[in-house]
Length: 76
Image 1 (spheres, helix red, strand yellow):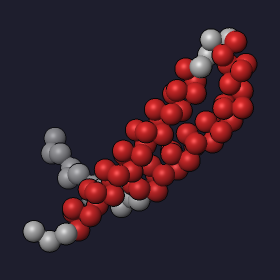
Image 2 (cartoon, one colour):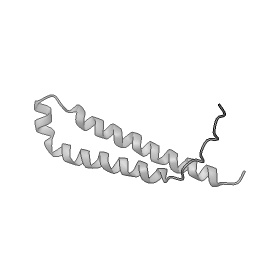
Image 3 (spheres, rainbow, N blue to C red):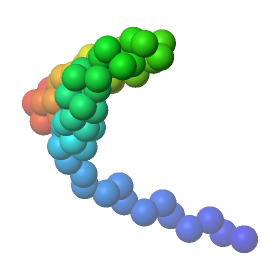
């Protein structure tokens, strides 16, 4: 059976997708920070740190996506 050719890749806005993820991590952090005392009492501070790590990794991801897009557009 002959293999059909692969379809062309979809054009996506990767920077926007990463920015939406960053915004969601920021909203989650904004919701959890006022609950710090309650989270601390129940030994659940890791939720806040998860949001912080999500923001840091998302920031790096956004920088990388923008860098990659610029590199692909530049000649040579």
